[in-house]
Image (cartoon, rainbow, N blue to C red; front, top):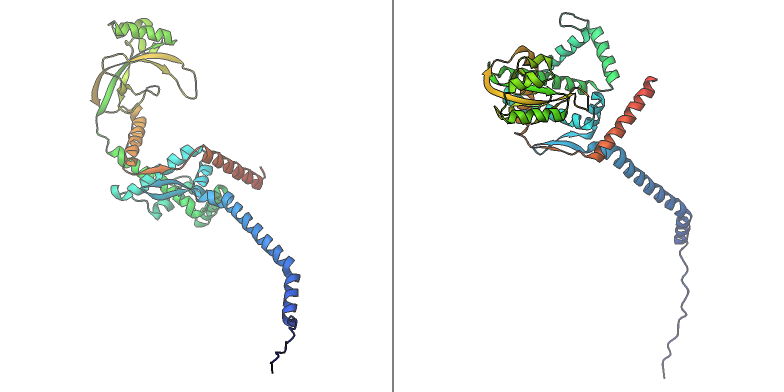
Length: 336
């Protein structure tokens, strides 16, 4: 007898009441979830934009010395603001300061906390011979920091740099020998370039330089002395020209007299170095000679380090924009 298998009816599954409630809840919350995601994404984008515009630029390393990040943009901006100068002069000054800081141990030079305190006390009192009370000093210092808009640590760092520069200048000038190379300089001054060119042609042809000076120079102070200017110590310039650049005994090329902020030459001259000899530096040249000696020493000292700058026209424009904003904010605060 055949066996019949009874078919069982497939019952339609009924969703669990618990699952149904969860699904409905998720559906109801979905708009809020989407809104939250959108808000978070927007906040992230705003945060990224804020970081890129207001934070990241200030972390840019502007000066690197010997592979070490040394000066970042935030400090660079503050120093440019305080100096009231452009970016290139600020970057050079900061580089000099860092080179001196690195050279302290090498030359046995150090700036102590007491040195800074003593300097500030003198600034507060106005004289080394005057004294002020602690209360007066503290009030002066508080007002100073408020005026400069800097912290005490920041300002003391500035004073340390000033004192370090003073000490190194004393060291360098103390190494200057009693006698240094001097150029015995003569010059014939003319009103125009063409006149000076004619002077040079006649001097090159063998005419006596002193006679030419008495005949053609428009400078009364040197004309009767045959054009004699002075003994010029090496490192001191004449109208921004270095007499040691020229061959002894041979008239130099026509040069221009430009002084101060003038853009047009006041006169022209033909220069002649008659001899080189060692002499003591005259008092009238000592200040410039010491400054130029120190500047040359600092350049040579800088060459013993690997210095890299990150500065271009784009960064310069950004710096000027920041300085304009900072100054405007300060004027609004002070009521100016």
